[in-house]
Length: 65
Image (cartoon, rainbow, N blue to C red; front, side):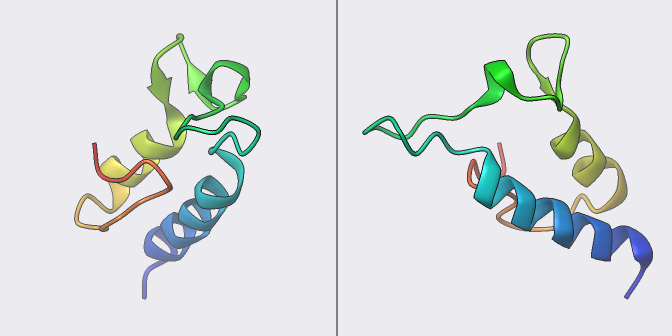
């Protein structure tokens, strides 16, 4: 298993724990206050995933969008 794949797995776990706003009743994300939100609408976690492991399925709590 490559280092890139292992790092993507770790980011996946991080995203599933951190990104979802559990205080709100509907499915909502914490993107606006996230340190990994770049230029207001680009998730750097997803950017890493798409660049290094584009075939990695079900990344984060937001899915493969």
